[in-house]
Amino acid sequence: MNFSSFSEFMAMGQHGLYVWSAYGISIAVLLLNVGLPWLAKRRYLQDEARRMRREEKR
Amino acid sequence: MNWTWFHKLGSPKWFYEISGRWLPWLGWAALVLISVGLVWGLAFAPEDYQQGNSFRIIYIHVPSAFLAQSVYVMLAVAGLVGLVWKMKLADVALQQAAPIGAWMTCIALLTGAVWGKPTWGSWWVWDARLTSMLILLFLYFGVIALGHAITNRDSAAKACAVLAIVGVVNIPIIKYSVEWWNTLHQPATFKVTEKPAMPVEMWLPLLVMVLGFYCFFAAVLLMRMRLEVLRRESRASWVRSEVRALTEGER
Image 1 (cartoon, rainbow over the protein chains, first blue to last red):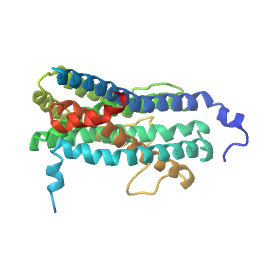
Image 2 (cartoon, one colour; image 1 turned 45 degrees about the horizontal axis):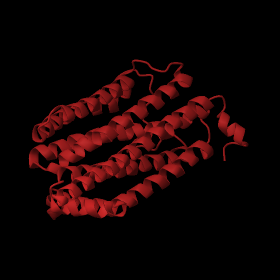
Image 3 (tube, each protein chain N blue to C red; image 1 turned 30 degrees about the vertical axis):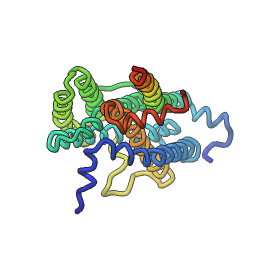
């Protein structure tokens, strides 16, 4: 471990704001890249299933 | 060499089956590697003697910049395969990889700006490396916009392939910008031929993060491509039964 306390870890030697904002932005973008296709897939499957059910009824 | 696998790639059904088997492995590998790399890079790597702790931004900046460039090369290769062998799946790969590449370029540029402020004293400079990366972002936007602008799928595929292949000229410019011009940006951290200019405790977590980012890209790309294959093949009977199987629980 390179830090002796949690507050020292958060402070990152005066660079805390830079380090944490860079990591925050990156993790948010990574999560967005997983979340958006996942939501798109769910929405698509629901629409498709509804369309197929409608066609079966005819 | 046996080329049947290459021809099978032309079959969306085969791709859908095989990618479904790979996806969980890639996803877990990405999660584990990125988590290990994050903790290692943020808490255990020693601080830089000049930059202090701000150097820790390297653990996301370098992997995302690597990926941003590799993905563009992949777009060009997919474009070439699509033009030469008329492989439909190559166009699916090209269209689905472009947004991920654009996001990675965004991460590289944003983390670079946040790193530049404490290190250079400025968020942005019109330096050769930074400017060529910005051009890469615009090339990605170009490919995405072109793909959406043309309704005919074959014409869109051809136009995007040509743009991706022409734009690949920017990749060596990005790579060698730090050597050809006097830039503020530091030279390459990793070189294939030389030992890294960092101690092992610093570059090993970086290597883990780079591998993690590549697995992440592969997993997200397969996720997106699988959905696109379902969309494009929505008339095929195997797709209909797959949709039925996936939505059965909700009925």
